[in-house]
Image 1 (cartoon, rainbow, N blue to C red):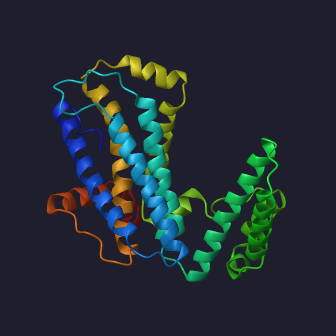
Image 2 (cartoon, rainbow, N blue to C red):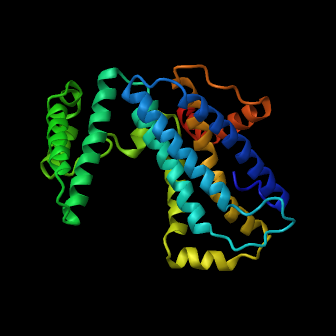
Length: 286
């Protein structure tokens, strides 16, 4: 992905590809916004998709202007990296809640678990700030209802004994997870390479945190050098495959026909989707 970026012209090309895919994503979101949302899957799917697009829009605004002959402005690589990681994690949530092909029973289990995680976190935050609001009791009642539904759910009964026990322990501690599957399992179901997912999020996180690695690396490279351009491009390049994948899945979930991308954009999306699929396919072929 990054190896092909050696000149400012290469950077400009990647930004144009990002722009084309993002514009198509906006068109899909606009069409989806006018469609009826008849299920929690569709409702959450649209909300997460729009959140992911918002991250991409903010990321693009922070990226140095590709129309300059050379980069002049101060690079905010940490903020770009934080947004790119948000894009990847929004993809993960989108797939878990709305994208994975699972039974309706499992879908309801996942959504309830997700909502229980939300209710429990809100209660902890409200308790930490000493909030005293009549609505808190309603949130607490929702959490109890969701937990009871999960404990007696048919999907819970079908889970491996170790996982059941772990979930019940976390329910007892008022610490339910957002996902009942680990990251690698979710990546497999999403059809992407788990090692690439982990590598991308780890590299982005290194620049989000203000630690010696990120501070030193920013100062090591001369502006305009291939190494600097690759570092500058990293957030866009890491986010782009996950943006393309989410648009593809979102288009299939809409209750109306999604707009078709221009032919060049369609080819670009296919290339970038393959970036995160390729390693998975190679491993499966061995």
